[in-house]
Length: 144
Image 1 (tube, rainbow, N blue to C red):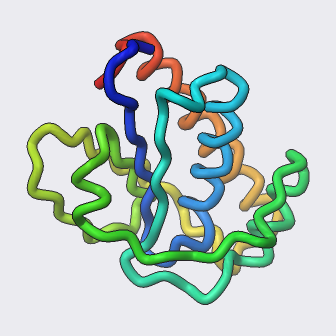
Image 2: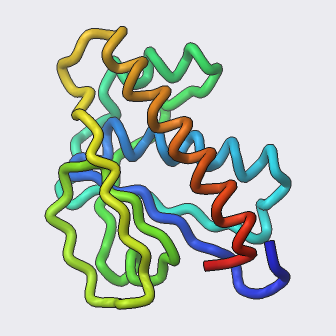
């Protein structure tokens, strides 16, 4: 990464209770593993946040020793998202950002809410790989 401004990554879905929470947790872990705490900022939220992170999501993330039980879904503002270099939506967003310099990616992931744990683990593994790939890309490019 460069010594310039931090790269800001946003992970967004409607409820901020499943996919975007998993993506955020993996991004935080990846940032720490790579020693990028000073050069990567992470934003997460939902357009209509739920009251809590889905219990099933908390359970499958514990498989990776990641505790989401204390996380609270939050609303994310357009202003916050327009400060991002990359915004990953989870396949459920009606998000419309009016900034050409933002790289918006729709990951088109299945909603884990109400799914069985094995299916949620597949979604989790997909998210983990996508986050790792995103960090590889951002790292290779220096900054977006």
